[in-house]
Image (cartoon, rainbow, N blue to C red):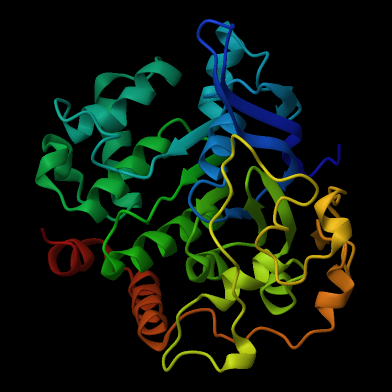
Length: 368
């Protein structure tokens, strides 16, 4: 494994259901043979429509779910084999940001207690005053006031609660943070703020981020590399700009073609898929996408395609005919974000650089 790879997953499988003949239920193939490598210091995105298995994969990478088969290694250590003191060290170095900030925060605990709890576990040598000082510093780091430590989660807006969740994740001093749809539950008006916050923290603290999302516009703005999942498998991966500019898999092409733009897309720039996603309890034979693919041929129905180099060494696609697709006209040269979104990102960036974002954001744009 290369020295710059911090998270390595090899042929990871996660199935649910089954059992003995009395209690047998259909086997859900949530994740089926996923391999990926996340490089130290990068932001790696995993995208796909609902039900493709990306959230399950995130929990397996984190060690919250044990894989049915395959292996996950973090910084050279086997995630599944960790226990006792080794597991505590692993939990210190790997943290998780949940999709819903309200349900992931204990409503009976104050913000100071929520953010300070990881310090009690991972830094027991700190005095009570040192913990309070550290909590105040973490709150300021994520754009909240230090005096908010005495309040409770229900007193905050969705964006502020997600900031609290981020501060809690940062408390242990992790090397890797996995975010499962970290902005999807937030208002559009505050999504840009949280996205920029994650980007700033990654840059300033040397964090590695793995972001699970379905919003391709968000991913293009914040990620270095992206993996596209379909029905439990990665069908395309590569540098973000390369994947967006030159999609090699029909499913990726369809996802990009579905991004809404002002005035819509001309007919030549649309790319659609047929029907609904098959059930993960009975995935199609051969290429799992062939039942919805407008380019499918006889081979696609019987031979599963491997993830292989598609044009450049770092760009891979699981498609038998990716080279034919590559010669097709590109998807619309959609900008990374709309004009309105670009303006929000620019204003927030200016506020960050000017040092005024902490209080102005909380008082004006994140009121309940």
